[in-house]
Image (cartoon, rainbow, N blue to C red):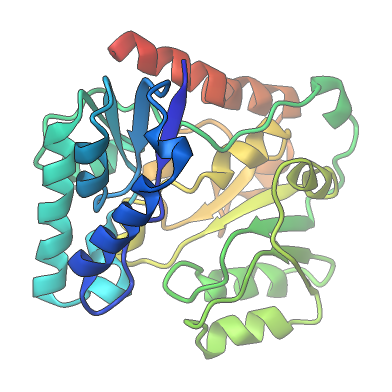
Length: 292
């Protein structure tokens, strides 16, 4: 199946609708997007309706991956409502509508199908390469953007402060929204800041980690978030420490960052791989095709 992924149309400018039409028109001039061989488009973007309407693909899947209306740039009532209306438009055009978490699915006033999780994010690896590398659980890894509205920097500082042997690697890009607490974390003497990573680089970082970190601020936006990196960590045999992430509740291998890290250290890495494997890209696409 030939698949086109539509994403990153979410506008940042003061006039979002104008910008998204410009971007959609730019995309439509591409030979790749004009190629009739595409038979499925998967949209992750609430502003993609102008694009998918003109492309007229045989099948459209709308994958709701975020509570976009709660992002800081859409804080006003008018902007938040605009995002909701745009999402409803593209969702009702879709043959299948899915969401990344039960909490997000319940939030939406749309007839969602049973969530099939995200359609990308995990990486295959040999299970034999993850055995015998656990220590006392003092090395943590965070992969993602450095932004105060996403990262619970206070929880990470607390985690580091409770044991002088703990270390944290943070791989990603610092965004404009870094408050003083986040800046203190990034300057911490036991925090190593790395460039953004993907693919095999994630695998190599996980080999040196005892835990993957999903540290979310307690905000309306993060209440519905399901970070992709959850599956990346687990596919590489690394348990996950999480804070304020209701969308992750009930997943074997995910633990509360404040009080369950010792239990996480005892988890069999092979069990984590088995849990995450059902959410690997190939398996998710197979389940999606069944819905179509």
